[in-house]
Length: 455
Image (tube, rainbow, N blue to C red):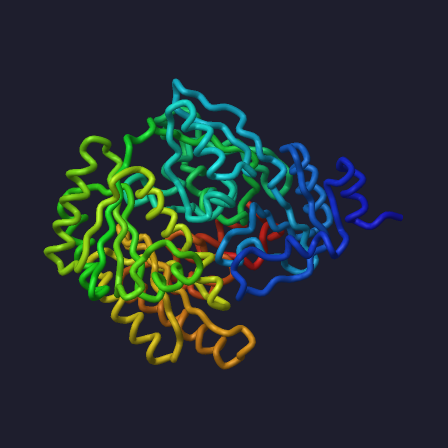
């Protein structure tokens, strides 16, 4: 008599299901190295919605947990295995099904890489704005699961702002379409927004209809160096209050600048206390935009302001920002916060974070999407040192507590996953938390979809 996993393998084409430890170990965790990961029963790598249905019907029948995954670039442990789970890798569903230039939408499968979609739509003069720092690796499905943001979200918004409709396989194997293709539509509850950011706990997305925009005009980038990080944050508040809409506004603190330079020589000033990287993508108006932003920075105490002269220099500055994750990872084990606070409270966040680092004796770096208040305080520690790991966890938790005290949130774009699960109830309050548990029970009554994550 066959085992349940053998039954599933027999129901799917050869090679879709793998169970050997050498193969399954690769799928055990995402990039949140501090989060625990269990031992999976096996991995399914479907190539179609029908195959996803087969998997979920089997899982419901046998009460087997299912953990959906994309490229595993997430930073909250949402894609980590639980013991005895089937890992559901969506990387094989990687087709761009259609790009509609008239309605300005793209219909894609979840395994499409973000940067590949961006390049494909650019070829026909269109633009898909959400661009997380991992855009060369992360998938659209993963971006949808966490409602990812990115460098451009200060002007254009996050992933959810570009999702028109989704095809989703529910826990029992039923296929449902939520949302629509049209630009407007308010019939019924917004189940599309509910699915985006649900981290694989409500259903498995197998197709997405995404809104596009006309390609932006050529961009120019400005960098400003500050003697204090507080001056940089105050400059950002003034720029955003002025009515200007930069297409990028990023912050690097001293430790992050040095980490990037150690990782790769990008010509960044290692003696700088803080650095802003701002961009305007308004073509002929961009020079005036970056000049105005630079003037505000100088008024706020910037010791140096440099404007890129062309697209190549602009791209170099943007690439420096995208190097933050690998550069910081090279320093040691990390716990990555992605708190967001109102822009008016950014200086308070920085001051509080510096006190937390001093009180816990930890190294805390603080890059982030400062234009919308979404910062990434990152605690670096030696994983082999139990005391260092305990102090890192204390610093991490203290930063999340601080964000809530400043009217912020525990996660701006990375999601809750495992890493921040214990803090969700604190942010939501008891009534809202119970409502979310009730929603989960409606969509997944057996609790097999990504159990132990988020709620």
